[in-house]
Length: 410
Image (tube, rainbow, N blue to C red; front, side, top):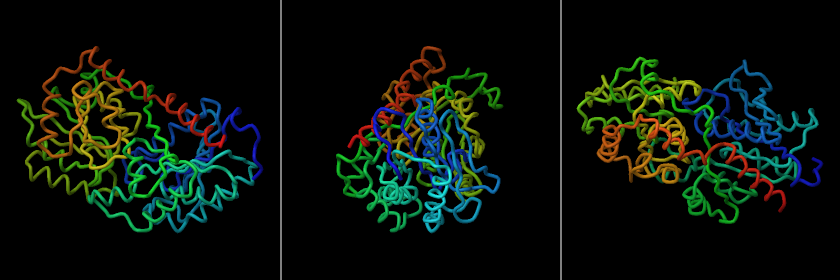
């Protein structure tokens, strides 16, 4: 592929890869979470800045259009790789060579040239590794989660050796790794022998236009909630999220009024885990206090954050933790375990609490503290929101452009 001269000055042309997970898929389902938000929001923001971004993903639904315009200079391109429809992410692996060929055919047909490849997750990075050779351009990777770390935690499904070996190979063969936190950078060095100079730390962002505070009482009424206190969980329904620990924490809450727990997330693929959690609620005799809401459209989430008195992230592992940013942007305090970017997002005792682990009594203690405090004054809401304005996508996009330009200059 012919290279462009004077790369540093003009708009960047980026091929972004998200092979297994569609950035416009339903959030909260088995394979669609924070990574999809990241890819979509960053692409849109880079497009607004004048850069050109094409996101490539596989067809997940026969009704998928080939091209979706996502905003100025940003679009999503569906490529056929394997059977149409949702398949387990590991089942995508055998179709990656076909995905790479389809991408290259599309590029040639449309006379496209890219300055660099930005891959997301190890499956996409496998494709990116081939494109970097075919196109002779830099390859940047963001893993979002690491198989070796998940296995070290030992909760949920064990990650296969295929993933671990592929991640190790990619770490040593790509040009730049983007880590969302310093902890992730340390993990890349510890588990995969990454060279520190090849890893840059750039946090994730939050859409401050979408995630804005709404009147708490009005939000409760619109959602059909009574005047009591509400605790919120948002995320995929899987063991790593520690929802069972949050259910147990409900039994330790010291509150005159029994608060309600709203669990947002989960689809047919997580039905088994959902049923397990429902049985646990009955076992703890809190089934009347827990509502499993399933998948909620992202545009509706600000209403749920605003209706909640506290948002809880009881995870064993997060690569970053976008939910904390979204909740604080809506003016709702957060209790989170020491995972992902929690310590850099949450101001201890001011915008919420970071706890050592998801021990139920530890979670309950901090939840009780926040439920006992009045937190719906305009001053309190504004303080919480102001704490995350530095994570706006415009700020993150500028940092990413700088990373791209530095890489291209080398």
